Length: 104
Image (cartoon, rainbow, N blue to C red; front, top):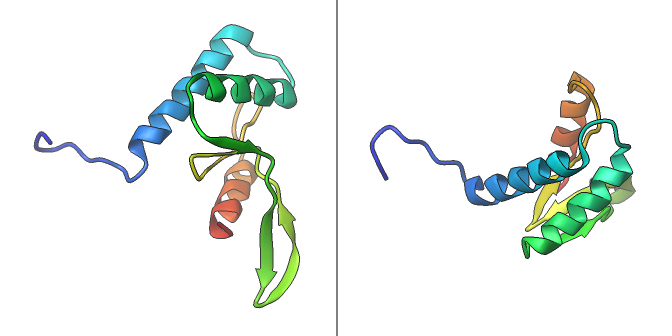
């Protein structure tokens, strides 16, 4: 690795997922509803031969007691992917993903 470059633990899969999202957005353009982008993303991930599962419930516990479930849009190669069809991300969007990550 060349000096000065920093790599992230999930850099390769992140690159592939973001690339799939760009491919979907370039095909569909802006303005679609989130479920349309999710279905198109599923098709793209399938084309790229990535393992994924849509809307898998993630259990939330308080100690040993099950409180309920979070349902992220996709889990791709073991990584949560939360799709947003918005013009700008808000702090609540980031908080949602951080909460999901805390329960994986």
